[in-house]
Length: 378
Image (cartoon, rainbow, N blue to C red; front, top):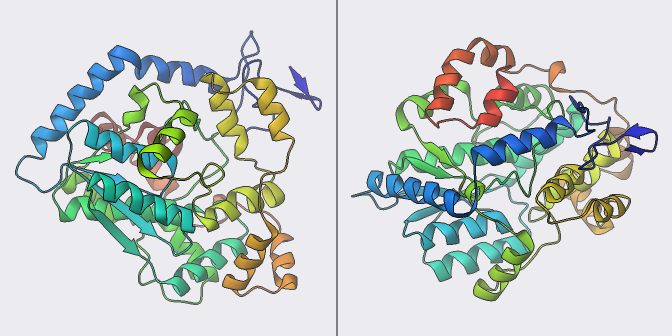
């Protein structure tokens, strides 16, 4: 299919603008074919439930005699909230873990409280110094790279490991679901602990003291000694996001915050403004394509919706500029900077490639996600 003179996948809305894309003789893109492979590897229905129940038994066995048997990252969003419910439903004793970058929306904060209180789940929260986070946020904006929200992604991963290490927990539940969130195209984003540190060193002014960075040495310690196995429960479930949102609202008083990853104000600013306006990356292509593949959205609906600009309120832009100390002139100057990428800064990428055999063993032991192995060691 052709859209604006660009070849588009016959199934989803990925087109030639998507990095590393290819089309087969049926006009279907490689990302759709990869999803088919994942669907075979992670079945749903009766077979998926049987697999997940077996995993639950392993988690319970490992957690005997401990206060908790798994950690679950929570953001106040739909997927993570439902994941806590699932853990409790199957008789597990989860510890909810939250990284607070001080940009949470009120809705997200209330959602976390509503769900955890009703389920009687303890919360482990790591709150970062506000000025330090804002300084690091400015660093990434001034570095002119698209991974401006990588700060929160890396920090949450580290905090999950910290909580697991503290309480000797051996399992980590992850709320990602390729059927509703999709797979990030290779080449759009790259981030690691060395990348974060290099950008902050070049552009930051506040000392990095409270940011929980995932240095390679720290990660290796967690991989080799804490040895937390990752499980993605939603991979094994028929997960209808619209129905789940209604269920969470009815059962816990949970409220929708407007869109994917919009529970955090800074993430909303990154995904809905900086990404499309400066870098030409519209994250909705990934989400909508996933929903088309899973039958939760039609291609026609996706094409109509994608024509609308990503929702972002003028008040949010003003709040971001105010909190980061930017005048309108300074912010326009940042938006006009030439776009750069991780290749312009120091990263662990070459080290990860050299360590590919090691990470292959970690993958087989369920200690790292397959997405990391494919994206970072190849």
